[in-house]
Length: 88
Length: 141
Image (cartoon, rainbow over all chains, first blue to last red):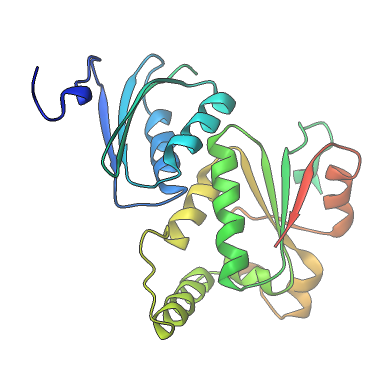
């Protein structure tokens, strides 16, 4: 992907599920993520795409509290793309 | 009340909802569902006009009048979560308990059957017994 305009967006995880939360604002993305995680086994890797400008900070707080891990966060324009591993 | 045994782990946050205004109802449910998503235990106590949110059809009515109010001011409810969705997340969450206030139910002529299912009716003493001595934070909307 060298030279690609979105070169920095190359994701190198095996994603089990993608959540498109671009249409919702706080607390939509966090709630969508949590309800998805409920039905997935520990160790699952989820990608969330959101446009809520508060999502990145919210996700960090959620992660610290819930014990689930943020593997990566990238921004592309207005979009925030986060990779999360279910730890508990 | 048996639903409020002191042996249970106290809630991290207790939310008292006394108004049926959207600026009370929405943040109450947004904070409750988000707290639950973060692993916190929440108890919600609905009293006075706030009871409307947990009366069947009440949430739809609150949302309708909120949208109308926004549109009258030239705004759109874009990106705001649906109230009904927030309430069903709260009801299905193991971390959230919803209680209805016994006194105001009676005073406002609300029948027990018109309260959405899974919301025990309790009094002030039960609520205080749960939170008076614990480190629970109480938020009032």
